[in-house]
Length: 233
Image (cartoon, rainbow, N blue to C red; front, side, top):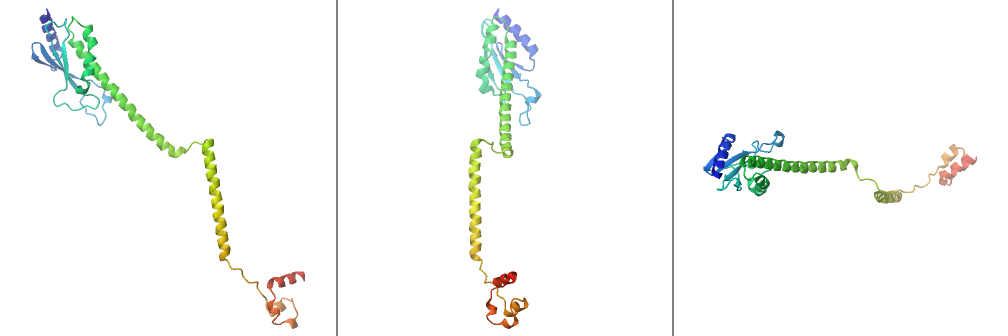
């Protein structure tokens, strides 16, 4: 009974996968499975061809009352795909088929196995792409936050205000000290001029003394005293 069911299933699979199935022997064959990924799953740096995996199937004598012997491999010369690797994901994918096999014991199950395997692999790619997209978005948000810090500055808190106030007071004190030092330095450089003295002729012309009072002694009267005399007069 097992052989008849195996032959019958094999004929059905030939009609479903005419280009994808390859015979190895009467009880062994392999099926090439190409994943269907949404168009938006492909970025500019990703290969345009979706990944493909090869399912190896071997019937034991009592199949389908006994589980088929399955294995996975990548196709020859397959281009690497960033979110899927048959070699790395084989154990996980085969383990994911265990429930399907147990649920279909006693029935032809390879088509169901292929369908489940394809869906599991596509879901795996989708999850990894979503994780990568979130990580990329977080990198962009972190860069944006850093850029915004240039415009928002440091948030004002009591601690940051007191720190700023101390620095501001210190800066003003240093500025005042520098200005005072500069002022003192300028005073040292400046020379005190002698009081301006008027000659006797200038005193006479201003009516401060009589003409007879002209003499050398008058020439020594400071200008400040003369101006004072003129005011009092």
